[in-house]
Image (cartoon, rainbow, N blue to C red; front, side, top):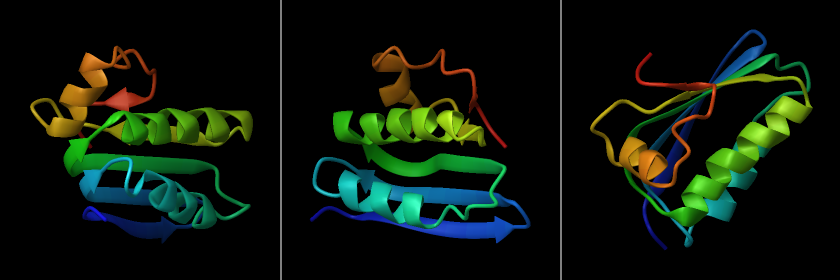
Length: 107
């Protein structure tokens, strides 16, 4: 299994996830389950920080897109942090996903 970690910080009705390491086919489903389980019913906003992701493959991109769709359906605001010149931002740009409305270059 590859190295991918999730840090969760909750503040009131907002949740901040910081992903680090590799997010790929070997661990994307585990990470997705961890993220989903950590979102409380009362959540109104989620921040997904990809600044420390060292590798993001198609399974990782699907995780990001799937989480975005799921949260929008639940009317939960999502912000995705992917700074320029990071591996995660490069993968997002290469996949043509840079137009995700909630994608931000930094905090």
